Every structure is written in structure tokens, then in C-alpha cells.
Image: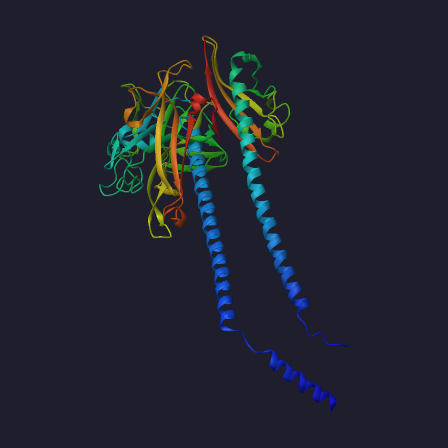
Length: 157
Length: 378
């Protein structure tokens, strides 16, 4: 057998390893940057979706009949009468279909339309006093990005 | 023998060829090399400066965005005292009045101090802010946790935003002096927290003196004590001469629609950073004092903070509005928004801009949630 005296193979391997490492690092950096950007965009979409949903719900509070608010919920309308173990918005079942009120117009880019729950906290018939708590759940481009917004409103004649 | 002779001949030939370079050739080569190396070095230095400038600008830009995001997050919670607006009936159980307990004065959700030249602010923060430092603690809940006005950058403004933290519902009615019952452990309340119990028609401000973990949730006790930040035996009603011995002002008490949340006052100001620039220069930073905690440096390189208050004549949508500085706010002003200018500079000075930091400014307007109708993030 002829003895190999050169270093071409070793040098080539070293160069390939170096280039591969650099390439891998560049890909990692790009991926991280992409994930950061996507996360920010997701958060913005979810927030905007929730803001739009909240605005829509607040503008329609005065036409919601008091009788539609039930302790067990009625398509997202709840009457607060019993002390709950956890707030409604922390219960997963609240955000299932039928548990919340879907916003009609979904935000472009959002994985799902915003969903809202409206709680009638207190009602007095004499001056039609109604205290509401509105909680809206908006999602980003994926269902993993969730933003909850909450607002209170009091209406009376 | 023939092979050996041939080798000799070649060696002689090689000696003949290696006769060296002339002086002119060497000088020319050196000159050319010098030019080439200079060009390469110049390119490297220029690239390094360019990269440093881009990195510095990017970091300054990121810091600016981060600072605005931080302020926006706090402003989104401003005035969110659950459903209880400060104008609604409120009973305070702390011994001190609002001027003595500014960390919990929920009657004003936003306010500011206009920085003037000569280290002056308008209005005077030494009279109303929780301060610590040379003069000792003034109006501070926890010793040493106030703002040290000697360190505060006086050319910039101070911004104060008040709101509440995450809220928990009640697990049982609360009326008199009994402990406050909460379901589960939705929020981590601790001893010495000052909390607001509120529904849409009444509110009460108390200091937690004991937290008991029970199988059904938390029991918050609020015993009385002698200090300014301790609970009194009788509460005082805000905007009224009356007093209340019970937690609730209305006979029905606090019921299922009430919630409990920690009151959080956030104070933004500029002060020297804990770090120095690469050149050893002092760097300014955005600091935040949140709640009863001590001030914390948030973002180094923020070296200007100016605040204008968007003020409306009243809360109707058609009312006239205008921007005012903190020292010029009209009496009984209804603040509906904030306009904030920030300047962010690179921490290190850069050669290519004359041994100065790279700076950039931006201005943003935030509507307060009560008027922007966006609610607050949970």
C-alpha cells in the first residue's frame, strides 16, 4: 500500500466543519429572529383582535335584554349569582363554542375570531341599573397566542 | 555516475537563477504592499465603525421601543380600579390621608412633575412623592423604598401612573371587619399588600395583615395598627366627612360581583444608570418604582422623558381637548391621555459621530383605557 503523506483530506474536513458550524449558527440566528418577529406579530394581532371585540361588545351592551343573562351562561351572557371557584375567564370551558360570543368580523391574520363573555354583575329594575364586566379573548396567527382584555361598564336610564 | 553528474548540473543552474531582487524592485514591492495593506486596514476600520454605528442605532431603537412598551403596559392599567371609579363611594382604612400615602392614592390615576432647569420640578415632588435619601423616608410604606430625588434627572419629567394588579373574586360576602375570603390561589396576596375591594358601586382600601391558606382558598386578615400605613379602627370616606366601621359602605356588603386587587403606583423617572459607558462616562437610564418596591433601573440609555397630558373639558366625546405640561394642568382637569417623548442614546460613544452617542427621539400618545374604551389586559 502506498503511504499517504498529504493533509488535503484533514484540511478539507476542517474547512467543511467550520463552514457547517457557521451555516448552522446563521440558520439558528435567522430562525430565532423569525420566531421573535412572529411572536411580536402574533401578540399584536391578538391584542388588536381583542380590542376590536371589546369595542364591539361595549357598543351593544344597551340592547342586551337582562333576561338573556343566565347563571349557567347563554351563548356568552352570564349572570353572576354564585361564588365561583375560579373566574369565568380562567375556565377553559368558557372559551369553547357556545360558551362565549364570537365577534362577527374576524381580524385578518387571526387564527380565530375574538370571543367575548359578558357578565351582568348587578341589576336594579327601578332605574334599569346594569353593571357589566366584559372579557374578550383574542388570538394571534396561531391559537397559542392569546390576549385577554377586560373592561367594566355601568348603564342606567 | 551519470545520474550524480546530472544532479550537480541542476544545482549549479539553480544557484545561477537565485540572484535576488534589485533595490528598486524591493522598494516598489514595499510601496505597493503598503498601499494595499493601508487600503485593507482602512476598509476594515470603516466596516467596524459602520457596524458599530448600526449596532448602536439598533440597540437605541430597541431600547426606545422597549421603554414605550413598558410605559404602555402600565398606562393600560391606569385607573383600572375594577369597576370602582375613584369618584364612587370609597372608604379608606389606612391611618394616613391621601397626601401621606401617595403609593395608594387612587383618586388620581395619572399625574406628573415637570422638570425645569436648576433641579426644580413643578409641582414640587418633595411635598407629594414617596421619597427616600438624604432627608430620610417621606410618605414611604417600606423604609428606603422611596424615590431619591437627589439622583433624579431634573431636566426630564416624572410620570406617575396608578392602577391595580390582577384581581381575584370573593369567595364569600364581605361586610364588616371579618377576613376577606378568596377562592383558590388566583392571585398571590402577601402581608403588607394594600388592596382595593370593589364592586361597581363602592370600594374599600385596606392593608393585609395576615394571609391564611385554607382548603377552599385564601383568608385575608386586616387587623388595625398604629402606623400611617396600618389599618385604623374606623375608615374615612373619600370626599365626605363621614366614617365607616365596616368594610362595605352599602348595607348589602361586597358580594359575588366584587373583586380584590393590589393597588400599584408606578413612578417613571430618569436617573444615572448603574453602568458606565465604555469611555467611562455616566449614562442615564429609565427607572421605575412600582408599588411599595424600591426603584429599579429598567433601560440604560434613555436620557430624556417629557410628558404632556391630554386634557378634556369634560368626559363627553365632543368636549375640547388640549395638551398641557404637568406644571400647567388646569384645576379639575380631566386627563384622557398622555403624550410621551423619549430619547434613547447608545450607551457607548462612537468615533464616527464625533465621540458622542447615537441618539434618537420618538413621541407616542396613549389614551387612558377609561377613555380609549379598550379595557385593560389581564
